Length: 342
Ligand SMILES: O=C(O)CCC(=O)C(=O)O
Ligand SMILES: [Fe+2]
Image 1 (cartoon, helix red, strand yellow):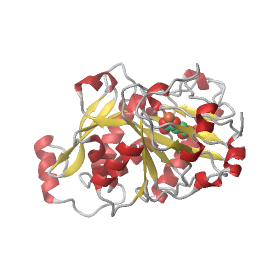
Image 2 (cartoon, protein in one colour; image 1 turned 90 degrees about the horizontal axis):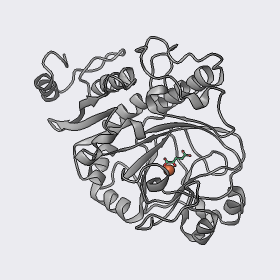
Image 3 (tube, helix red, strand yellow; image 1 turned 90 degrees about the vertical axis):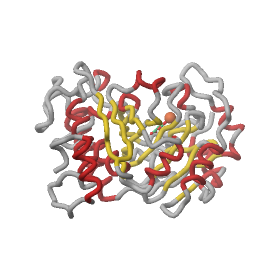
Image 4 (cartoon, rainbow, N blue to C red; image 1 turned 180 degrees about the vertical axis):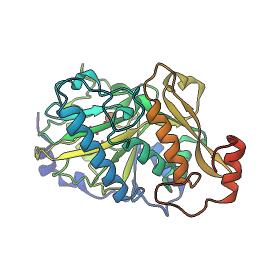
């Protein structure tokens, strides 16, 4: 079974630019959605601010250094001022990370009162990519299912080839995943994602570890695409898109977020605790519902997400003061939540 670095060296065409799968703020939402349905993956370029992402990466790194690697006794609540009842890191990290790094549900990734997922999601909602995401979901009522979202610290190890579909590896129902690196991801240097394009229309047979195996991978060499991401780029892949974590053995650190969301749907209510719903209010995407049951220890995170999202659209003042928000939005916020929104 070959290693990624061997296969990529023999087939450098995997790294070629795919302008047919790559889109910018000038692209037409319907075309992006059509390509996503047809191919299973699209790359959106320059969606988020690299400076904002660099801050999130620092917070994530500090979380790893303080809460995961130096986790002598379990100190799940020792965290600069955020609501003390939120969950700490999962018990599997009690002895630190694996050689591949670690992965965490978003409300546990915090440091100094900052939550990278809350910051990135707030920026995403107000970015040009949001209408494209609505078009893919065919709805303007979107729910982010936090229990299915993840943040990853990945250490680039030499990996054998393989691939998975999220339909078998993550969840059989949730139609898509948005993958957001908090940094540049340069193939052959940084661990990233690669895709087999186009995606098949069905779930593939898997090995016991949910991987579809190296023989499938080797039979699809002509359909491989390993994109280069600049900080701010993101990909959206479908649950049927076969994809893989690349690993070249450089040992470099990579931080990324996986956001799982879809159109509000009663069939998905079982994934809504915790969650936020994003709808349009006077044409502006805002969080219109939060859900976090008493027993679910993610309240600080959910509140922080709602607050940041409101600040992002100008509905609440930020620390660095902002220009006054549009009147229509303020009026709408007041109607929605009397007393809120200024
Ligand atoms: O970040 C990774 O290496 C894997 C991510 C992944 O498989 C996904 O987002 O579905
Ligand atoms: Fe995946």
